[in-house]
Image (tube, rainbow over all chains, first blue to last red; front, side, top):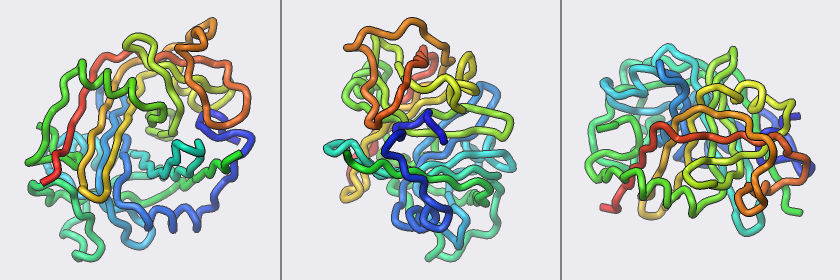
Length: 135
Length: 135
């Protein structure tokens, strides 16, 4: 049991299949990667391609520089502040550059303008999820 | 300019003071830390004590083990999926164990039951924030 999160006695573990299904319901997550100053963390739009997570970024940013061929963690959650409940899914794995771009239906749709032609693909190794049931 | 996130042409950087004020408006964030398998990421309840971020966890969990005296990144965001806009704040710094507990008004209130007497305090070194203005 992982006690470090906001889940404890009302914790339900979410199995891998349901975790991957939950990932398919959202479009924004957060990716953690490591550079010389330790872990860093950025919110990103994403798309699922099979069980892989696909992110587009720029080739000269911190994420491409530190994330490519590096280990990453990726998190998505849905929180209900009113009932203090929700779920979170965390994927750990390696990010690799994908070339060429994924087909449009398997490509993220960034909320912001700007060119994002550098594609990172995360192949999930560890997939874990937790649901906090309202009391 | 950081292009790796969901912000680009409509990006506004948020200054440090406003970042810290935004952190005071929320109670759930995500902390990234590094263990032997690379970065990991968990959602946590938090409280602010001055400019420090205070998190309570258990002493035998992954966060306490890998986060204590380690470098961490901490992220909070507010997203509006309808307008594809929002803000995010990322803090990078070192996490240290705090003993004894912070006073109740400067202590996080975990959503879940369970004992969380291990207090991690993050002293912000790098504070950055971005706001995506709706088009």
